[in-house]
Amino acid sequence: MEVSIVCYIPTLEGQADDMQRWLDGVRERYGVVPVLLPPVSWNDDLTPWPAAPIFKKGKPFSGQADAYLDRLEKDIIPGIEAERGLVPTQRWLIGISLAGLFAVWAAARTRLFTRVAAISGSFWYPGFADWLESRSVHIQSAYISLGDKEADTRNAHLKSIAEDTGSVVRILKSKGVQTTFEWTEGTHFGPILPRLDKALVALMRLQRLTLDGGFTCPNRDGTLGVGGCTFCDNAAFHPGYTRGKSIPEQIEAGIRFHAARGRKADGYLAYFQAYSNTYAPLPVLRERFESALTHPLVKGLVIGTRPDCIDSEKLDYLASLRSGGAIVEVEYGIESVFDETLQRVHRGHDFACTARAIQETARRGIPVGGHVILGLPGETREMLLKEADILSALPLSSLKFHQLQIIRGTQMEREFFHRPEDFLRMGPDEYVELLVDILERLRPDIRIVRIASSVPPAFTDAPWGLLRPDALLKRLEARMKERNTWQGRRQPLRWAWA
Image (cartoon, rainbow, N blue to C red; front, side, top):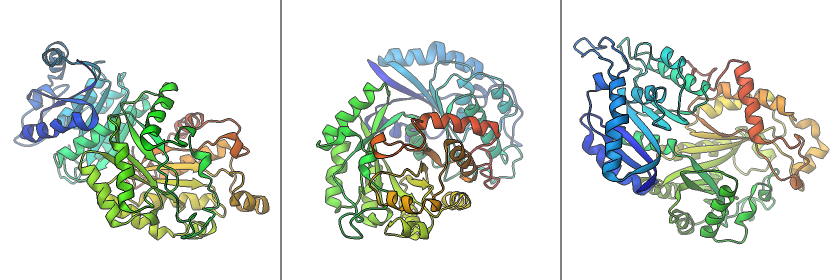
């Protein structure tokens, strides 16, 4: 039986039954075949070289990982796949604690796995970071997480775990591995199952399918206003395949759209983007969101909305979708953290409203994304750097940054014509320099989804010419290397490494 992905997970001592129950639902939810590897001696089979015990009565580490990896490659994994009739196109490895150390170590020792995850990986292991620095790494992507209470210890080996993990994250990124780091609540071994779920989702390559759910906006229907925000023309950011189609038809069209452009995916996220996608009664939201989730390749939802279009009832419903196995993320249009800016662009709410919505969403365990526009009228470079500090204090999981684009026919185009001196206009190099300074101030666990936007030439004068966001990203990466800097560098010590 040919399958796309088999995910191998070393059994965690004492939690085999709980892990098996979690695994039973994984294939149905995500289309990944999970396999628990047989129990091993952790201090022996998962350690790369001998090391002394780290506890007074602990066992030494014998460093037999090479022998265990050889058994995995030649006997254990071929035997499992033959017995179950599995012919995978990809193999992943997710490990916890010493097994997380083993997963990253194996990424530099074999091409058996294409993606790995380390949950509370034991990167304190003597000499590991230096060894990894000297090796080639053979994986596409990695996910690393650490419990936020793990460094609270008197043990001399374990108290440096945040810095040691940071070194591993930095090394993987420097070797071209797409690496995601996340702080999670809890200690070294708990809670494990939610962290396994996060690791699996993070390893998946999920393509967003932009959908039009047929919603509107309180800034357009007369509730708050009729013209929308001064910068807004949704048509400039909306793909043509959504027009005049039902949600299932849009999904099929979107899959064809991305496939025609060679974009491979392990699954899809239904991205309700146009206007405010929680601005409707709950029964309407149920019908539209759940019609997307019925598609077998759709693994979850990303819901773009305004912070003043959410309430407890809607958030509880979205949390119930997550508890039922769907991936759900809410993406709020933050745009700016400054009330004077929000008022000037006719946003219709203040920043306190945004902060409340983000906090209430995160409190329910729903990942929260944000959208921010850089260069709105009246804002200075110093204000945008302060904005990064304010955003880092919020429980955000991800951020999108867009340079301000003056869209033809908008109220902002007229404002720019009359008061161009109020606008922070930047060329690509100036914008990249600003982004580097912003990223230094952002928490390193905030995932950056996008650094710039592009709209069809018919909507704007395209002051940057035909420069695409992916080309701008290469400039950003090169500039960060030139400055020897990284996201979170100017954050407090706990964060200043990733």
